Amino acid sequence: MRIDFVSDVSCPWCAVGLHSLERALEALGDTLAVELHFLPFELNPGLGPEGRDIVEYLGQKYGKTPQQIAQTQAMIRERGAAVAFAFGPRLRTWNTFDAHRLLHWAGLQGRQRELKHALLKAYHGEGRNPGAPQVLLDSAREAGLDTTAAQSVIDSTRYTDEVRAQQRQVRDLGIDSVPAVIVDGRHLIQGGQPPEVFEQALRRFAVAA
Image 1 (cartoon, rainbow, N blue to C red):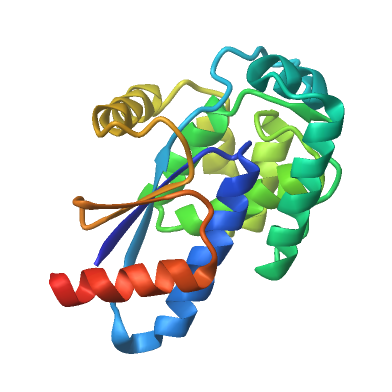
Image 2 (tube, helix red, strand yellow; image 1 turned 90 degrees about the horizontal axis):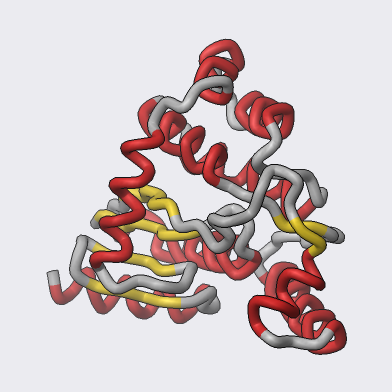
């Protein structure tokens, strides 16, 4: 079974969704052979390198008050804790395109999942800018990637075309929110679902295959 996890590093529900999916895969154990891949999605493609205050940005984008944003963040922290992901303070949101380029390269090295985890922790756990060269390099190191090769990718525009092509692929599938889980190219699970929802769906898809 091939699973494509469509997500953005800056998306908190993507952090919850990935950890929920992984709990489901642990529960399934050896009953299901899974290839997990990651496809890029940008929530904030128009942001500059300086980023934006997160409360101001979310308020403007979604029409929410600071109180509503705080309530949502508290709920997300609870959902994260339930799947062993710790959210820290996130004061700003940033552009993540370079993170997606590095993730594409990491996939070619067989370390995409490890880098995804490192980047999610850097931003959602530590509040660091996932588009900053030093954060990208630190995350590559944590993921066990060659840092000299990673630095070369970070300093270039390599994999821009590949990432843009994958983003078009996602849009062509009608996906306009994340996380989204595509199973074997034909089944779709949307949102940061609890582990049991992912597990039940994967079992059902496996039987139908």
